[in-house]
Length: 187
View 1 (cartoon, rainbow, N blue to C red):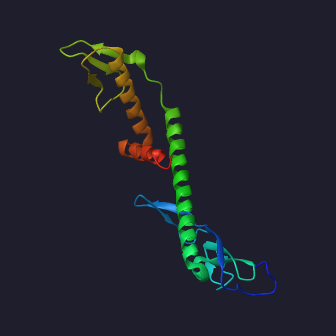
View 2 (cartoon, rainbow, N blue to C red; view 1 turned 90 degrees about the vertical axis):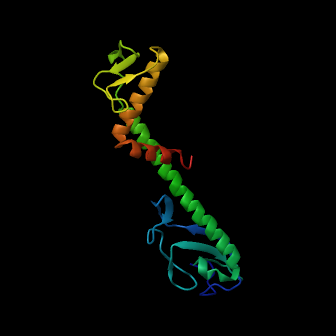
């Protein structure tokens, strides 16, 4: 609504002060896209249509108005530039929120991980040193062969075991990779 009481409509030329994209964004095909109808639907002070992307303008009389970006025609280049910035900012905010949610989910899954059962790791004598972890699978196997029987190889077994447990909690390796990718994005 206008701050001026002597006019019913904005008077051109306009100065575009700010553009705000109020829509929510969701991921589709690895892209963040606006959700139609999800924003703050406001009637335009100029055309009286409903818009979700709002241009805050000052008219020739110094009154402030809120119009759709298409109605800010007197300063079309500025409106287009600010609308692009507002859309990018809204998209980035949605990406940051999605990444934060992925990091929180990973933290929750990590907190649910059982402790590595180091006391169950045993060396199996044979042609090649083999380590087994009773009651657990690593690389889909319950016995894993290593070239040496030192602490570094046991640490590698622990890392692999932890990744397998986390993948199980996440719903599989693909789900875990996707979650980890989302957590790294927008960071």
